[in-house]
Length: 369
Ligand code: 8BR
Ligand code: ZN
Ligand code: ZN
Image 1 (cartoon, rainbow, N blue to C red):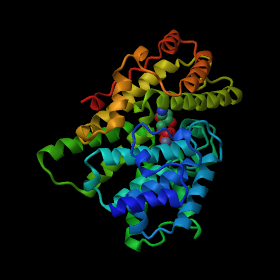
Image 2: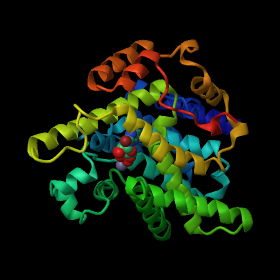
Image 3: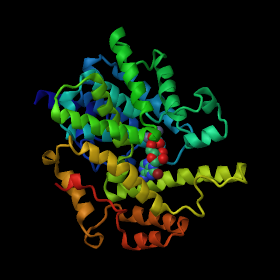
């Protein structure tokens, strides 16, 4: 009870737009709030007692949050900006509290996971690894074409931490900091989509052995942490329809801007993403069935379905209720977005989807049990 009161005070004391109760919800929509990284980091770090445990100075944390948000906004990417960073942090927090995994991890591992989630796309230019390599961008040359963006996100945040004004982890001892840093780096690097298949494979193997013999090692918990962050990174497709459709639209726009650049600079090559010809629906269905489904399926073994709260019931309703019977929140906004989509896509499927407002084959069984 006392802890609860103390937690509620933080939100009032710092004049934050939400409290932790809101951030515990799977249906939370980050897009509705300003300066999303600051309140998400403050409230979620506090909820996991990281501020007390690592003696984090609140003023330093606030300065760090501002610097982090500046980096996320540097290139004004439609999708990979501070909202995505905050969203992935909040979703990672949700996955932690909804799963029965919390007791499996040490507090240092939880600190590394939540910190990695918050920083994982810092200074994202809105262009993907393929583009950076193809254009011989400085970043690609610096990292020898290997997980170029992910290396940059991690590396530049650790440079930020060298500055005393931003070093929120200054009270860790040398050993703690060494394992923390190493874990954060491996978590951020694992968000490279190129690792998806091997990550799901390793996680599946982990659960297979866990069922037959119960010993676990730190390698195992690292794999689990990587999968949680990867799942949070692609979770927008598993969120309620309006949240998902908004994110999908933003990421498609980002891809198409890259396509426009490719067309301008490489007139002979076919661009990776062409706004004239790309079938958005097919691409999204492919993304959901090949990436999102396998990731959440492998985690279904640890997500505690019976503890799902009202909002997850609400989400199930959104997924299972026929569109015609369900009133979609933010109707106005959604119509605006779908208008844009209608113009962007030439696909007949897309027109059907727009007219019927059907989810893109969103059928996550684990939410319905
Ligand atoms: P990052 O956020 O770390 O870049 O990882 C997510 C990646 O998944 C995107 O960069 C993109 O390549 C892919 N993706 C696709 Br395709 N559709 C997506 C969607 N609706 N939401 C999130 N990612 C998507
Ligand atoms: Zn990324
Ligand atoms: Zn991301």
